[in-house]
Image (cartoon, rainbow over all chains, first blue to last red; front, side, top):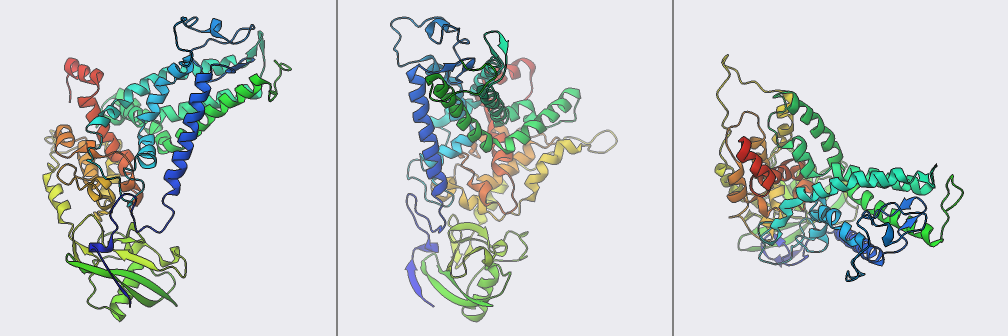
Length: 271
Length: 247
């Protein structure tokens, strides 16, 4: 027997203090690295305003542009026309277009866990000391998190556009075909759909808010929808990361093809 | 049999210390078995709460190598053969003695919740419910009240907001009642104001430590937070309620 005097219960107190002996910090550190890296790439790519299109492919970071014309990409192809002269060059359409999906991810119930742990230390891990503060949860400054469903509406509006772009990627110079980029873009739309439709707010809206699923034909239909969304919701974290990584990969792929660094394999014989 | 060392916190509210015990551990033993061996051979005055040894009574909640767990469901085989296992009482509740804590605060929270209040019976004297209406609340009924979720919740554990937040165990009790097709109580205002749903920031530790694998966060707390959003923060649903009625 050996004795070491301690405080009550032998517990550690203070930020990130714990008696856990496992590598609890790996998860939050990996999250901070992954989210941080993604954010840096997104801001760089979105602010650059170049190399966002190649052949029939359009980067998902640039959804406010129409399909690029034969003349190439540029403001003349933009859905809303050219930017006015006074518009700051750094605020590209991609940065503006990123607002809705960005808000959707920031207020997402999965990402809240991820960044509260990884960046804000509230708490950094389970049974690991939280950052000392006058904790108010999501009742004060963070009360905006309650508007997640409005961010969802914005994200839902973007989905058809992404599918339209994916559909367009099978047609180049009036000729139907397929390329690696087409498949990359379709997968991007699918992954984003799985992530968006697995949303907790969506799950509530489609049926979760009901207490009686058996009370009529419409509630029964909503019950079926709720069950389907619940299945996606069980893997919300997986789809959150898959779609996040894939959207960046899609942009990188199209960027590299556009820059001529790699050649897209396709049925059109090149761009 | 193999010699294993277990480090157990011994003491009470006035203080204490870790004490190490070396015992012969057999194949398949759980941490609670090893504590009992230490109690039997070295410290028969050691206090530890236990009952069923089957993960169903929720009595032997403790922190093993810093993780909130049930002693009876944590196998020694999950740890390295030469690893010293550290056992502590739950951090969020006052220590009575050694590994036993006073969890009565939880029972007082339960008393604050309006009990199940069903609508009147049908004309034939029955209450009718369909499987699809009640199946999702069955998950919450698996709760064994071990209070590991309450112990791990940082709102209670680190920020000591016991006056503001009832904790995850009671959020799922509220969800179980609120989602019940026969219940008539409007529980949303109290869930927001009195039970403090807004204090939960969805960091999911409650779900991670639940020995019954109840999806506390996704199926209990978040749906309740969304119901609060519909009531207090979403202008469209607020307008629809004004126009068409309903809760």
